[in-house]
Image 1 (cartoon, each protein chain N blue to C red):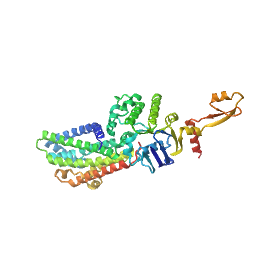
Image 2: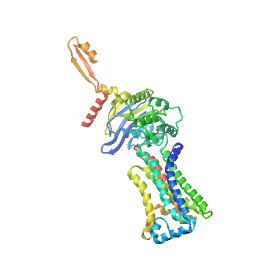
Image 3: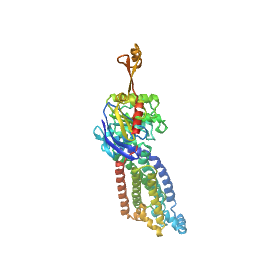
Image 4: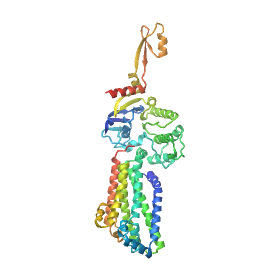
Length: 262
Length: 270
């Protein structure tokens, strides 16, 4: 790993992290603040009126405890989509964009191996993804402790966010793989399209019925909040982590062996 | 030294490079001439380890440009055909970043280069003009005192004064025994900086020789009969050689542009 490049890219990630952190802060505080019996009843009424629509965005109306309330309204869509978009943008910015613009020449025309170069960029992506989710976790704990002291199952939340981290590392590694293999509109479409399509499939699968079959076509179904909160669901999370390792290894191998038109 | 052996990269439709074979010795700057699409940049990308040869091999001081690219890069200073710098930094930050990234700590050429190619290093890169970015790219490429210079149209975007300064700089580096490969469209630049020249057409090397030999080969000789008593004056005025019986031989040396066009047309016919 090249420390100089790592810290430059970490600084370069700050802008996006602030934007995504800001948006997630707004949602986390808003949703944590919504936890009270009256709103739960209102949301319950929404769920009764439009169960399919609510289920599509991951809101299953099973929010009994504070943690399951958060899981229903944050982990069904918001904490899946926003960090995913961050991973897409950053993965593209760390490799494909440099190659597209040609400025990758300065990084490649130096006595730094391509493995070290790509490994550093991957470390930046994973570190910032970890940072974003750590921030969300801390914010959830602090806001819940302030608003509803003692009501949050912190251990359950940590398990839940551990699983979420595995999911996002897997998505990040996939985006990084595409970023390392090529650039241009086709690769950008693949990088952004596949995770988005998988999220849409997850939403369709949540509708139930015949559409539930989509569950087998999306990585998001390996993130199982109910099981994670109960301290289970480690196997699917482990599978996500394994896939992240596989995608990362392929990305590094691909970058080391590809032709660069820079 | 740079050694290219049977290098082939076929993109289809006669594009790429085909069976290239040449060497560049230290202190003998080598100029590559060819129109757009002749394969100059493809060749240079192979030397930089950016592309893997389909056939053949490129080596720099015995190291394979693809397999040993990390070691090769330690010796190389590179200017790409299209200068694109990493943005979000000031000029000085960019040079500092590259030095640290390369792990270069010695006393480099930066100060000397800044005197010759002045750049306001406090300006953010995205605000720099094309020429200023080119100068910054030149400083970045040479500040670690590379042994091998690989230059792809290095003066593009520079004003005539800076072009002259660059040509002088390359001439000085050549005299120091550096290995220099320069690709260019500017005949004068190649003529002034390079000792040997190769002409590329559709990925094939049409000819390669020293500039002097090329000029000699493509020169035309005329023998003129001048009036009695005028031979000496004529020979003096037109740089000719006096022969017997009032005849004078004059030679018209072809310049690089003429040689290039002649080789190129011959290649077209073939």
